Image (spheres, rainbow over the protein chains, first blue to last red):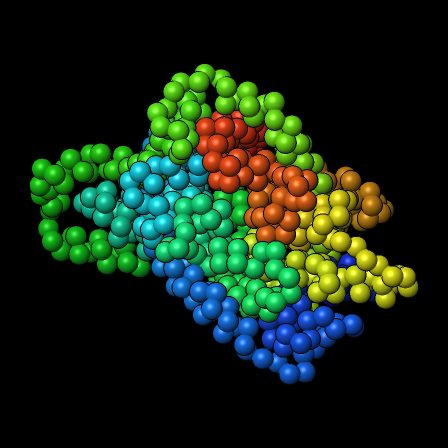
Length: 282
Length: 313
């Protein structure tokens, strides 16, 4: 096989110029805004409006990071984002795994229940957030960490449930059945046998839940104000600016995108399942 | 291997353990207890608010006016006959349609270049998916930095490339600001199409292409005869998922144009947000969001249900 194949291939394979150009162009398109944002974040304010623009800052500075984190309360937003995203992630992964196991192994509620959960994923947030805002004001959850944690848990549940649903369906039942035969309760078969085996799937689901919470803006915009505001909402301070805060906006963006990109790239093996709610195995 | 350890522990403990009354009850209703927390949470924070907003949309709900008088369909009428509402719905359909179409074509082209292995593919893959993990707010911010006059370098680059002075108001002038919003959306979501379509492409058995090659079929014919039919379900899935997210478009608009100039870049979500939270016509906003919800629900039931049902995994 191996001896025959190369001869065939080399005849047809010339340098694919079109492909390289397309891929190169697209890579540039992806990287360029990121580079410019980084460049802006370390550029002294004097370099903002020069013609031609300063492509490589010669005197990099961290003043914008300092201002973004402290003067614009970016650090408070960062801490709030961490608390809220981590809490919601844990709850979502936990409740999502519980429900997914029941759906996968006991077919609980048939297709109606699973599709009901799925449909929640496609509800436009504007339809939910208005009444939630009114309810939260009534019960004192407006602008609290708990309030946003609950909202984020619910908003990430459909993805957690469906990712884990697909994961459990792809896992052989035999070990849990053996455990049941040997006298385990259903809970033990789930908690001690199925959950450890599904750990990689649970971690992947949790990573995507975390990224979803970390990058979420709309709920945070409406359900928080001075206390529980998250990192993305801090960017409101830079809207309509006239030149003075470009660096601060860029610096805060860099701080905010590092954790979610790092996690996302680490979990990229599960990306296709995450994006399609488990419908497609990557 | 934990399961063997568990089982041997159970065996060592002797006969099946005696369960207390509660444990027996819990074991019998096990499957319902597992779904209970998630279902209760969704009921409390999604279904109850939806019902509540249905009530709100039939009454007068205003922070200034005490009492909630029943007003029938008045709130719905106000939305339906508001030209801004109609404009925003139209713009939502138009913007999301164009963005998703560009993302689809570009994503497919890039996926086709990445099907076969080559040195550096892993690194390139990791770079290409980065936009998916960035908050749309930051994406809007990044493109604002590139496009906004006089700071952004885009006009300067275009001037150099075209050899004539370019002074486009990317964030303020009518056709260009739509282009800006679409570019930001395309930048963030083309990787979505790319990742899903690539998964679909790599799942096509390579021997189909080898057989076609032996039969003297050229690459273009192979694409129409093999790639397209095999990829079709995946294309439909990617398009549906993306479209359902695209019609919510809000964050980039909030950051980049603020809906302006005037109401030129109002999308459905942005319109409902301003009605509810800057004008405080909460009843009108909930009525409008119910209309939008019904609209989305129709799309969901028509497309998503059928898509996922067929997939046994």
